[in-house]
Length: 428
Ligand SMILES: *Cc1c(COP(=O)(O)O)cnc(C)c1O
Picture 1: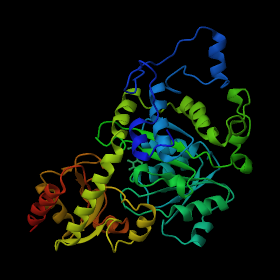
Picture 2 (picture 1 turned 135 degrees about the vertical axis):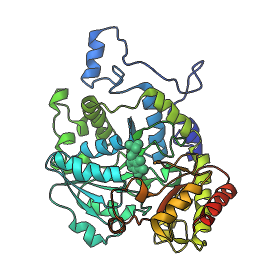
Picture 3 (picture 1 turned 45 degrees about the vertical axis):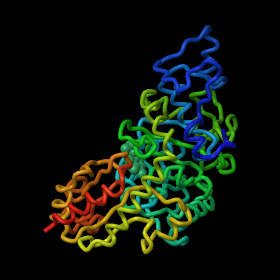
Picture 4 (picture 1 turned 180 degrees about the vertical axis):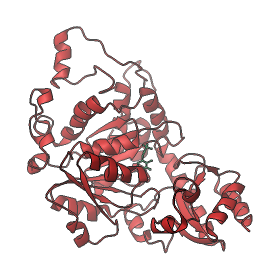
Protein backbone atom coordinates (compact mmCIF):
# COMPACT_ATOMS: atom_id res chain seq x y z
CA UNK A 1 0.00 0.00 0.00
CA UNK A 2 2.94 2.31 0.54
CA UNK A 3 2.99 3.52 -3.08
CA UNK A 4 -0.55 4.90 -2.68
CA UNK A 5 -1.26 8.36 -1.34
CA UNK A 6 -2.51 9.19 2.13
CA UNK A 7 -6.24 9.19 1.36
CA UNK A 8 -6.13 5.84 -0.36
CA UNK A 9 -4.28 4.37 2.61
CA UNK A 10 -6.89 5.83 5.01
CA UNK A 11 -9.44 3.75 3.14
CA UNK A 12 -7.57 0.56 2.32
CA UNK A 13 -4.28 0.12 4.22
CA UNK A 14 -3.89 -2.58 6.83
CA UNK A 15 -6.33 -5.11 5.39
CA UNK A 16 -6.34 -6.53 1.86
CA UNK A 17 -8.88 -9.36 1.63
CA UNK A 18 -8.13 -12.39 -0.47
CA UNK A 19 -10.54 -14.09 -2.86
CA UNK A 20 -13.95 -14.60 -1.24
CA UNK A 21 -12.92 -12.99 2.06
CA UNK A 22 -14.94 -10.29 3.86
CA UNK A 23 -14.61 -6.83 2.30
CA UNK A 24 -14.77 -5.12 5.68
CA UNK A 25 -12.14 -5.71 8.39
CA UNK A 26 -13.41 -8.77 10.29
CA UNK A 27 -13.98 -8.41 14.02
CA UNK A 28 -12.13 -11.37 15.50
CA UNK A 29 -14.15 -11.54 18.70
CA UNK A 30 -12.13 -14.31 20.30
CA UNK A 31 -9.98 -14.25 23.40
CA UNK A 32 -7.93 -17.20 22.27
CA UNK A 33 -6.68 -19.13 19.24
CA UNK A 34 -6.48 -22.85 18.54
CA UNK A 35 -3.32 -24.86 17.75
CA UNK A 36 -2.77 -28.45 16.63
CA UNK A 37 0.34 -29.11 18.70
CA UNK A 38 1.79 -27.80 21.94
CA UNK A 39 5.04 -27.38 20.10
CA UNK A 40 3.51 -24.92 17.62
CA UNK A 41 2.10 -22.89 20.48
CA UNK A 42 5.39 -23.08 22.36
CA UNK A 43 7.17 -21.42 19.48
CA UNK A 44 4.80 -18.44 19.77
CA UNK A 45 5.54 -18.15 23.49
CA UNK A 46 9.27 -18.12 22.70
CA UNK A 47 8.73 -15.36 20.07
CA UNK A 48 10.21 -17.81 17.55
CA UNK A 49 7.11 -17.69 15.34
CA UNK A 50 4.64 -14.85 15.02
CA UNK A 51 0.98 -15.61 15.47
CA UNK A 52 -1.96 -15.19 17.78
CA UNK A 53 -2.54 -17.05 21.00
CA UNK A 54 -4.27 -14.70 23.41
CA UNK A 55 -5.99 -11.38 22.68
CA UNK A 56 -4.38 -9.60 25.66
CA UNK A 57 -1.16 -9.70 23.63
CA UNK A 58 -2.36 -9.49 20.06
CA UNK A 59 -5.56 -9.74 18.06
CA UNK A 60 -5.86 -9.81 14.24
CA UNK A 61 -8.48 -7.03 14.06
CA UNK A 62 -6.32 -4.74 16.20
CA UNK A 63 -3.23 -5.56 14.16
CA UNK A 64 -4.93 -4.70 10.86
CA UNK A 65 -6.03 -1.32 12.21
CA UNK A 66 -2.63 -0.66 13.82
CA UNK A 67 -0.97 -1.46 10.48
CA UNK A 68 -3.16 1.18 8.80
CA UNK A 69 -2.15 3.81 11.36
CA UNK A 70 1.53 2.83 11.03
CA UNK A 71 1.24 3.19 7.26
CA UNK A 72 -0.39 6.63 7.59
CA UNK A 73 2.37 7.85 9.92
CA UNK A 74 5.14 6.36 7.79
CA UNK A 75 6.33 3.97 10.51
CA UNK A 76 7.53 0.37 10.43
CA UNK A 77 5.33 -1.07 13.20
CA UNK A 78 2.34 -0.07 15.27
CA UNK A 79 0.09 -1.26 18.07
CA UNK A 80 -3.27 -0.27 19.50
CA UNK A 81 -3.86 0.39 23.18
CA UNK A 82 -7.02 0.77 25.26
CA UNK A 83 -6.67 4.58 25.44
CA UNK A 84 -4.40 7.47 24.58
CA UNK A 85 -3.19 7.47 28.17
CA UNK A 86 -2.10 3.84 27.83
CA UNK A 87 -0.36 4.66 24.52
CA UNK A 88 1.71 7.44 26.06
CA UNK A 89 2.51 5.42 29.17
CA UNK A 90 3.59 2.38 27.14
CA UNK A 91 5.62 4.46 24.68
CA UNK A 92 7.59 6.04 27.54
CA UNK A 93 7.79 3.12 29.96
CA UNK A 94 9.00 0.81 27.20
CA UNK A 95 12.36 2.61 27.30
CA UNK A 96 12.38 4.56 30.57
CA UNK A 97 12.39 2.64 33.83
CA UNK A 98 13.09 3.41 37.50
CA UNK A 99 16.10 5.75 37.67
CA UNK A 100 15.44 7.18 34.23
CA UNK A 101 14.64 10.77 33.31
CA UNK A 102 12.31 12.36 30.77
CA UNK A 103 12.54 15.75 29.07
CA UNK A 104 8.99 16.85 28.23
CA UNK A 105 7.30 19.89 26.80
CA UNK A 106 5.35 21.66 29.54
CA UNK A 107 2.52 22.33 27.08
CA UNK A 108 0.82 18.93 26.97
CA UNK A 109 -2.51 17.30 27.78
CA UNK A 110 -3.34 17.46 31.52
CA UNK A 111 -3.65 13.69 31.80
CA UNK A 112 -0.21 13.18 30.27
CA UNK A 113 1.30 15.89 32.47
CA UNK A 114 -0.09 14.10 35.52
CA UNK A 115 1.11 10.73 34.22
CA UNK A 116 4.68 12.02 33.90
CA UNK A 117 4.85 14.44 36.84
CA UNK A 118 3.00 12.36 39.45
CA UNK A 119 2.45 8.72 38.53
CA UNK A 120 5.72 8.00 36.73
CA UNK A 121 7.56 9.94 39.46
CA UNK A 122 6.18 7.38 41.93
CA UNK A 123 7.83 4.71 39.77
CA UNK A 124 11.18 6.44 40.21
CA UNK A 125 11.20 8.25 36.87
CA UNK A 126 12.09 11.93 37.05
CA UNK A 127 11.13 14.59 34.52
CA UNK A 128 12.17 18.07 33.51
CA UNK A 129 9.53 20.18 31.75
CA UNK A 130 10.55 22.79 29.23
CA UNK A 131 8.53 25.39 27.36
CA UNK A 132 7.88 24.30 23.76
CA UNK A 133 9.19 27.75 22.83
CA UNK A 134 12.51 27.36 24.69
CA UNK A 135 15.83 28.07 22.99
CA UNK A 136 18.11 25.24 21.87
CA UNK A 137 20.39 26.08 24.85
CA UNK A 138 17.53 25.85 27.36
CA UNK A 139 16.44 22.56 25.86
CA UNK A 140 19.99 21.23 25.97
CA UNK A 141 20.30 22.15 29.64
CA UNK A 142 17.25 20.02 30.54
CA UNK A 143 19.04 16.73 29.79
CA UNK A 144 20.76 14.65 32.46
CA UNK A 145 22.96 11.56 32.23
CA UNK A 146 19.82 9.48 32.86
CA UNK A 147 17.59 11.03 30.19
CA UNK A 148 15.97 8.30 28.07
CA UNK A 149 13.54 10.21 25.89
CA UNK A 150 12.02 13.54 24.90
CA UNK A 151 8.23 13.99 24.77
CA UNK A 152 5.98 16.64 23.20
CA UNK A 153 2.63 17.17 21.47
CA UNK A 154 2.56 18.35 17.84
CA UNK A 155 -0.43 20.59 18.64
CA UNK A 156 -0.92 20.69 22.39
CA UNK A 157 -4.28 20.01 24.03
CA UNK A 158 -5.62 22.42 25.26
CA UNK A 159 -3.04 25.21 24.88
CA UNK A 160 -2.82 24.77 21.06
CA UNK A 161 0.91 25.50 21.05
CA UNK A 162 2.74 24.01 18.06
CA UNK A 163 5.88 21.94 18.67
CA UNK A 164 9.04 22.72 16.70
CA UNK A 165 9.61 19.04 15.99
CA UNK A 166 12.97 19.55 14.27
CA UNK A 167 14.32 21.50 17.24
CA UNK A 168 13.20 18.83 19.71
CA UNK A 169 14.45 15.97 17.47
CA UNK A 170 17.86 17.60 17.10
CA UNK A 171 18.26 17.94 20.87
CA UNK A 172 17.06 14.38 21.51
CA UNK A 173 19.40 12.87 18.93
CA UNK A 174 22.36 14.91 20.12
CA UNK A 175 21.86 13.24 23.51
CA UNK A 176 21.35 9.78 21.99
CA UNK A 177 17.66 9.41 22.88
CA UNK A 178 14.44 9.23 20.81
CA UNK A 179 11.76 11.90 20.42
CA UNK A 180 8.18 10.78 21.09
CA UNK A 181 5.47 13.00 19.60
CA UNK A 182 1.79 12.77 20.52
CA UNK A 183 0.18 13.59 17.16
CA UNK A 184 -3.47 13.35 18.26
CA UNK A 185 -4.66 16.78 17.10
CA UNK A 186 -3.27 17.18 13.56
CA UNK A 187 -3.42 13.43 12.74
CA UNK A 188 -1.14 12.11 9.96
CA UNK A 189 -3.46 13.73 7.42
CA UNK A 190 -2.13 17.16 8.41
CA UNK A 191 1.28 16.33 9.90
CA UNK A 192 3.61 13.32 9.93
CA UNK A 193 6.13 13.89 12.74
CA UNK A 194 8.41 11.05 11.55
CA UNK A 195 9.19 13.05 8.40
CA UNK A 196 10.54 15.82 10.65
CA UNK A 197 12.69 13.61 12.86
CA UNK A 198 10.35 12.11 15.47
CA UNK A 199 11.18 8.49 16.34
CA UNK A 200 7.93 7.34 17.92
CA UNK A 201 4.42 8.73 17.42
CA UNK A 202 1.47 8.26 19.76
CA UNK A 203 -2.26 8.92 19.43
CA UNK A 204 -5.38 9.19 21.42
CA UNK A 205 -7.49 7.58 18.70
CA UNK A 206 -10.48 8.66 20.80
CA UNK A 207 -10.24 12.03 19.05
CA UNK A 208 -10.17 12.66 15.28
CA UNK A 209 -9.16 9.13 14.25
CA UNK A 210 -12.39 7.69 15.62
CA UNK A 211 -13.91 11.11 15.08
CA UNK A 212 -17.45 10.26 16.15
CA UNK A 213 -17.10 10.16 19.92
CA UNK A 214 -17.75 6.43 19.87
CA UNK A 215 -14.69 4.55 21.15
CA UNK A 216 -11.83 5.35 23.55
CA UNK A 217 -8.49 4.09 22.21
CA UNK A 218 -4.83 4.77 21.59
CA UNK A 219 -2.04 3.87 19.20
CA UNK A 220 1.77 3.79 19.10
CA UNK A 221 3.81 3.88 15.88
CA UNK A 222 7.56 3.28 15.65
CA UNK A 223 9.50 4.97 12.85
CA UNK A 224 12.01 2.11 12.88
CA UNK A 225 14.76 4.71 12.59
CA UNK A 226 16.17 4.93 16.09
CA UNK A 227 19.36 2.89 16.48
CA UNK A 228 18.97 1.36 19.96
CA UNK A 229 22.16 -0.67 19.69
CA UNK A 230 24.20 2.49 19.02
CA UNK A 231 23.15 3.61 22.52
CA UNK A 232 22.95 0.17 24.10
CA UNK A 233 24.07 1.35 27.55
CA UNK A 234 21.06 3.69 27.77
CA UNK A 235 18.45 1.11 26.74
CA UNK A 236 19.18 -2.17 28.52
CA UNK A 237 15.54 -3.27 28.11
CA UNK A 238 15.98 -3.39 24.34
CA UNK A 239 19.68 -4.21 24.11
CA UNK A 240 20.22 -6.79 26.87
CA UNK A 241 18.72 -10.30 27.17
CA UNK A 242 15.08 -10.56 28.32
CA UNK A 243 14.96 -13.38 30.87
CA UNK A 244 11.20 -13.70 30.47
CA UNK A 245 11.77 -14.80 26.83
CA UNK A 246 14.78 -17.11 27.23
CA UNK A 247 17.26 -14.29 26.91
CA UNK A 248 16.32 -12.81 23.53
CA UNK A 249 17.70 -9.35 22.78
CA UNK A 250 14.91 -7.33 21.13
CA UNK A 251 17.15 -4.90 19.24
CA UNK A 252 19.16 -7.81 17.82
CA UNK A 253 16.36 -10.22 17.00
CA UNK A 254 13.80 -7.71 15.64
CA UNK A 255 16.12 -4.95 14.43
CA UNK A 256 15.48 -1.22 14.43
CA UNK A 257 12.19 -1.74 12.59
CA UNK A 258 10.55 -4.13 15.03
CA UNK A 259 12.26 -4.06 18.43
CA UNK A 260 10.28 -1.27 20.07
CA UNK A 261 6.76 -2.51 19.27
CA UNK A 262 7.67 -6.17 19.86
CA UNK A 263 8.96 -5.35 23.33
CA UNK A 264 5.96 -3.13 24.15
CA UNK A 265 3.62 -5.95 23.08
CA UNK A 266 5.39 -8.92 24.62
CA UNK A 267 6.31 -7.25 27.92
CA UNK A 268 4.01 -4.30 28.61
CA UNK A 269 0.81 -5.63 27.05
CA UNK A 270 1.49 -8.99 28.67
CA UNK A 271 1.97 -7.45 32.10
CA UNK A 272 -0.32 -4.38 32.09
CA UNK A 273 -2.96 -5.65 29.66
CA UNK A 274 -4.29 -2.38 28.23
CA UNK A 275 -5.52 -3.96 25.01
CA UNK A 276 -8.11 -2.27 22.83
CA UNK A 277 -11.19 -4.40 22.29
CA UNK A 278 -11.51 -5.69 18.70
CA UNK A 279 -14.99 -4.09 18.60
CA UNK A 280 -13.47 -0.70 19.33
CA UNK A 281 -10.72 -1.29 16.77
CA UNK A 282 -13.44 -1.94 14.18
CA UNK A 283 -15.18 1.33 15.11
CA UNK A 284 -11.84 3.13 14.97
CA UNK A 285 -11.25 1.76 11.49
CA UNK A 286 -14.59 3.13 10.28
CA UNK A 287 -13.36 6.54 11.44
CA UNK A 288 -10.00 6.11 9.74
CA UNK A 289 -11.71 5.35 6.43
CA UNK A 290 -12.92 8.96 6.24
CA UNK A 291 -10.14 10.73 8.18
CA UNK A 292 -8.70 12.37 5.06
CA UNK A 293 -12.17 13.66 4.10
CA UNK A 294 -13.07 14.88 7.58
CA UNK A 295 -9.86 16.66 8.60
CA UNK A 296 -10.04 19.36 5.90
CA UNK A 297 -13.62 20.12 7.00
CA UNK A 298 -12.60 20.38 10.68
CA UNK A 299 -9.84 22.78 9.61
CA UNK A 300 -12.20 24.81 7.39
CA UNK A 301 -14.68 25.18 10.26
CA UNK A 302 -11.95 25.95 12.81
CA UNK A 303 -10.47 28.62 10.58
CA UNK A 304 -13.87 30.25 9.87
CA UNK A 305 -14.84 30.24 13.55
CA UNK A 306 -11.43 31.60 14.61
CA UNK A 307 -11.68 34.44 12.09
CA UNK A 308 -15.23 35.30 13.16
CA UNK A 309 -14.28 35.35 16.84
CA UNK A 310 -11.10 37.37 16.28
CA UNK A 311 -13.20 40.16 14.75
CA UNK A 312 -15.88 40.14 17.50
CA UNK A 313 -15.93 42.99 20.05
CA UNK A 314 -16.88 40.74 22.99
CA UNK A 315 -13.84 38.48 22.44
CA UNK A 316 -10.60 39.39 24.19
CA UNK A 317 -8.33 37.09 22.14
CA UNK A 318 -8.33 33.90 20.02
CA UNK A 319 -5.75 31.10 19.97
CA UNK A 320 -5.62 29.29 16.62
CA UNK A 321 -2.40 28.69 14.71
CA UNK A 322 -4.17 29.22 11.39
CA UNK A 323 -4.77 32.90 12.26
CA UNK A 324 -2.22 35.37 10.94
CA UNK A 325 -0.78 37.07 14.00
CA UNK A 326 -1.06 33.96 16.19
CA UNK A 327 2.34 33.32 17.82
CA UNK A 328 2.39 29.87 16.19
CA UNK A 329 1.25 30.95 12.71
CA UNK A 330 4.70 30.72 11.06
CA UNK A 331 5.66 27.41 12.59
CA UNK A 332 2.23 25.96 11.78
CA UNK A 333 2.65 27.02 8.14
CA UNK A 334 5.95 25.14 8.08
CA UNK A 335 4.75 21.89 9.62
CA UNK A 336 1.06 21.96 8.65
CA UNK A 337 0.50 23.84 5.40
CA UNK A 338 -2.95 22.18 5.07
CA UNK A 339 -3.96 23.42 8.54
CA UNK A 340 -3.86 21.86 11.99
CA UNK A 341 -7.22 20.87 13.46
CA UNK A 342 -10.66 22.16 14.37
CA UNK A 343 -9.97 23.13 17.98
CA UNK A 344 -10.03 26.85 18.72
CA UNK A 345 -9.69 28.50 22.10
CA UNK A 346 -10.72 32.04 22.93
CA UNK A 347 -11.08 34.35 25.88
CA UNK A 348 -14.27 36.31 26.43
CA UNK A 349 -14.26 39.78 27.89
CA UNK A 350 -16.02 39.56 31.24
CA UNK A 351 -14.41 36.37 32.52
CA UNK A 352 -16.29 33.53 34.18
CA UNK A 353 -19.77 35.18 34.11
CA UNK A 354 -19.46 35.98 30.42
CA UNK A 355 -18.33 32.42 29.63
CA UNK A 356 -21.21 30.94 31.60
CA UNK A 357 -23.81 33.21 29.99
CA UNK A 358 -22.38 32.51 26.54
CA UNK A 359 -22.26 28.75 26.84
CA UNK A 360 -25.79 28.54 28.25
CA UNK A 361 -27.11 30.09 25.04
CA UNK A 362 -25.34 27.79 22.57
CA UNK A 363 -27.79 25.63 20.62
CA UNK A 364 -25.52 23.53 18.38
CA UNK A 365 -22.29 23.42 20.37
CA UNK A 366 -22.76 21.11 23.34
CA UNK A 367 -20.94 21.44 26.65
CA UNK A 368 -18.68 18.37 26.83
CA UNK A 369 -15.34 17.22 28.19
CA UNK A 370 -14.30 16.11 24.74
CA UNK A 371 -12.76 17.37 21.52
CA UNK A 372 -12.33 16.24 17.93
CA UNK A 373 -15.79 14.87 17.37
CA UNK A 374 -18.10 15.22 14.34
CA UNK A 375 -20.37 17.34 16.57
CA UNK A 376 -19.19 20.74 17.77
CA UNK A 377 -18.58 20.94 21.49
CA UNK A 378 -17.11 23.40 23.94
CA UNK A 379 -15.82 23.66 27.46
CA UNK A 380 -15.05 26.46 29.92
CA UNK A 381 -12.18 25.10 32.04
CA UNK A 382 -12.87 27.57 34.87
CA UNK A 383 -16.34 26.15 35.51
CA UNK A 384 -15.51 22.51 34.74
CA UNK A 385 -12.11 20.79 34.54
CA UNK A 386 -10.32 23.53 36.51
CA UNK A 387 -13.14 24.56 38.87
CA UNK A 388 -11.08 24.03 42.02
CA UNK A 389 -8.88 26.99 41.02
CA UNK A 390 -9.59 30.65 41.77
CA UNK A 391 -9.19 33.38 39.13
CA UNK A 392 -5.59 34.12 40.13
CA UNK A 393 -4.56 30.47 39.92
CA UNK A 394 -6.34 30.07 36.60
CA UNK A 395 -4.41 33.00 35.16
CA UNK A 396 -1.11 31.55 36.38
CA UNK A 397 -1.97 28.20 34.77
CA UNK A 398 -2.61 29.90 31.43
CA UNK A 399 -6.36 29.17 31.51
CA UNK A 400 -8.00 32.51 32.36
CA UNK A 401 -11.56 32.32 33.74
CA UNK A 402 -13.12 33.53 30.50
CA UNK A 403 -11.35 30.96 28.31
CA UNK A 404 -13.54 28.70 26.18
CA UNK A 405 -12.19 25.76 24.20
CA UNK A 406 -14.30 24.98 21.18
CA UNK A 407 -13.91 21.89 19.03
CA UNK A 408 -15.43 22.60 15.64
CA UNK A 409 -17.20 19.58 14.24
CA UNK A 410 -18.37 18.78 10.73
CA UNK A 411 -21.52 20.93 10.64
CA UNK A 412 -21.91 23.79 8.15
CA UNK A 413 -19.75 26.69 9.24
CA UNK A 414 -22.53 29.25 8.61
CA UNK A 415 -24.67 27.51 11.24
CA UNK A 416 -21.80 27.33 13.73
CA UNK A 417 -21.05 31.03 13.33
CA UNK A 418 -24.74 31.96 13.64
CA UNK A 419 -24.90 29.91 16.86
CA UNK A 420 -21.83 31.64 18.27
CA UNK A 421 -23.13 35.03 17.21
CA UNK A 422 -26.48 34.71 19.00
CA UNK A 423 -24.76 33.36 22.14
CA UNK A 424 -22.28 36.25 22.15
CA UNK A 425 -25.21 38.67 21.84
CA UNK A 426 -26.68 37.18 25.01
CA UNK A 427 -23.69 38.27 27.11
CA UNK A 428 -24.76 41.39 28.99
C1 LIG B 1 -7.23 13.01 24.93
C2 LIG B 1 -5.76 13.05 24.80
C3 LIG B 1 -4.96 12.09 25.43
C4 LIG B 1 -5.54 10.99 26.29
O1 LIG B 1 -6.24 10.12 25.50
P1 LIG B 1 -7.44 9.16 26.06
O2 LIG B 1 -7.82 8.41 24.83
O3 LIG B 1 -8.50 10.05 26.58
O4 LIG B 1 -6.84 8.30 27.11
C5 LIG B 1 -3.60 12.16 25.24
N1 LIG B 1 -3.05 13.12 24.48
C6 LIG B 1 -3.80 14.07 23.87
C7 LIG B 1 -3.13 15.12 23.04
C8 LIG B 1 -5.17 14.06 24.00
O5 LIG B 1 -5.92 15.01 23.40
